[in-house]
Image 1 (cartoon, rainbow, N blue to C red):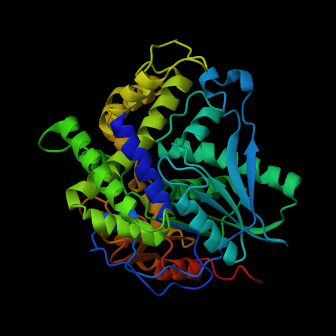
Image 2 (image 1 turned 90 degrees about the vertical axis):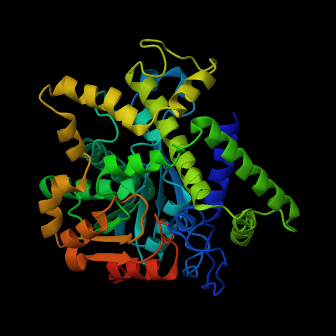
Length: 433
């Protein structure tokens, strides 16, 4: 349980590192030494926050996609898919936003994007990632495993149509045009959804912005998995290091005058803890593993995979799942890919090779569309930790003048910073008419 405890603390820390932005730009910045890992964990605090609304009129929504009876008893608390709507008072353009790996519709980065788009005059519908447990549990499909981008896009597109009809009926939303964006895995999903819409022509997206997407999902998740693979000592060494980080955070927190998790307090914790690059990478790997643990458990129960719990075993809502969650927590993405995803996909297509499936988990699979679609632009950082060697150059080549690549920011660390928000505003300008 020590591993889980520190990840929960990390989650609180990460959320607090993207607080509700103030009405004016904050001139002060932090004095933590910059690395791409620092920016990823605490936010790119070397640059001031952008001027975004303190509050926006968010409506928490949910939609029933499948019968309650068809949802496993252990998920009794999650019988409808949740999402959110931010509504303008009058008719306006509408933007869909898709969350990153394992993230919900109301995660910190999603809230920042909601505020940016609302300030530009958009209605905003925010959707959780197809790898988020609430999405998996409520998915009205018995065949589509999350993670295969083309399949995810079909599921997202179907749900987008349904939630849009719901907000028309229940909230009197009138959309003049449609746009689409998403960060991290949600950025890759946005690209595939946009391509699908070219043939379906339901939304005819006016603008699509990919934020810090992976080029190859296979490459990116293996990078993140490697952060928990310490060269010496293995899992026990990782657990010991995480415990040490927790104690240093606890000591620093106890010495603070304020008990609030404000941004300045978070920066102070990281400064006083003086984390090494290896420790920052370990925190990132732990956070990713926690997200993948939830995903794998939801998949195993929902699809009767038999990888974590016994096949055909129905977990009731009173049964302990501690052992199952532990087993899920030690599975790497590579193991999930080789032992679960490849065989599952080969059941419906015996000719499919693992190499062909890896190609499907990539923007390269739709490169021709991305090269020639003027409506699609990309923003990322040159030091994004999820991009393998040569992938920044690949994105620049594919998108050309439609690519904005900031020199620093790590993975989504600058999503609420002045320069990043100014870029997004330039891409979504013209909404206020």
